[in-house]
Image (cartoon, rainbow over all chains, first blue to last red; front, side, top):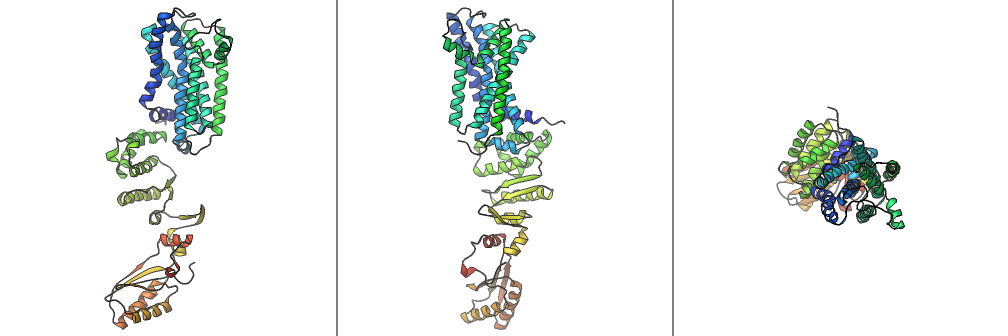
Length: 257
Length: 234
């Protein structure tokens, strides 16, 4: 029998050993809860938003895009807990290379993000119905999520590799998570009425491009702007991946707080 | 714990069936069978130690580092683990084993390195270490009555003449204890004296130098001057 490749073995281990069901419930439950509550409540106040027919129809693609952050946060958490409990050292004593561990973390990020996308789509089903997506639009959504997950996962791994305090790491992670989600177009659109400074901040956030691209796919309004957004996201993902590699190369072993 | 063992084997690429069989073997060997469903954080210190060693043995390897694997274990379990490790060593596994329990090293190891202040002071087989650094061996003779002070002086003089190195006699009730590097010669001399003096010898035992004796001698924190064998230990 062909042995399972090391990267996949580590991914299985990430899923089985590093996460407890309550954490998963909270991490995926929170955005699902927001779709139901925020979507239903704001739907009463807000009519159509841009090309979306209702607020909840606007919110769902945004929440789907934000799953790249959820996946990245979970992978960052696995990495940091591995460091904290000296699992990184133990793994590297095993038949694994740093590159394989890093690849497994990023693959875990991607898989978690896709699980999140599936959960969000299921939760949204009663509210917005089954979206009619072409294969190309589905590919755009998955590609965007993949690039975004690589970007945010790489970013958190790069940060996690340089920090030796759990408190600091989890504070930065929470801050990033909330900052990136709220200063983006996940919950609300950017219009001509949006203050210029805020607009600039929102458009400097990669999640904005991801949310807009996913939304365009949902509303069948995919255009050249989304292509540029995809390219920007790809460049950022490559940069974050390189930063994660650099952080890994300089990773200091030994106790962390 | 069983799942944890099998996950560990999976990480090392051990085929599923072999991992299952090895997990059963380890659970039995380390007496963890009753704890197979317990979570790792619910284990006691000793159970955790056994589990850690069991987990490391889930896969095949050429070199195994073990850091005091028997600390906190009862004698029976310790013996089982050491027997198992000796078996794996005979099958070709190289084991680097750190311990403060020197008779374990004596029993298990082909070569023993002594670390002193973080440096390798020496490395040799246990027999060689004992020969080089073990010093004198202890002889314990038990008579049918306590010896008088005159008899003690006479025995001391005769043994000292025959000894390569010799530690002063010590008498505890009917037992006479001394240390020497050539105990066989002295035992013969003692027997001759006892026959002539009409003293019955109930028992004579020669205790071989232990690795602990060699270690103590080597690191220079050995017995006090009154207990030191005379002569030079090389």
